[in-house]
Image (cartoon, rainbow, N blue to C red; front, side):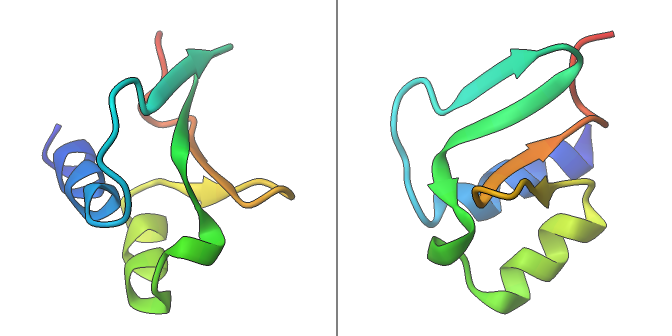
Length: 67
């Protein structure tokens, strides 16, 4: 759970809105923050924490989706 909390704290720096998450088919999507908004350093750390970007630049993780 610590990795998820750290990732959310990083993402919160870029946009802090209500309902920023969506979970579907065991994938957790970050709806509020796009790759272009995130520094390279934070992007790298998010990758280490289990988040990646799809072709549209939306962050997501299969590690933290429902099971």
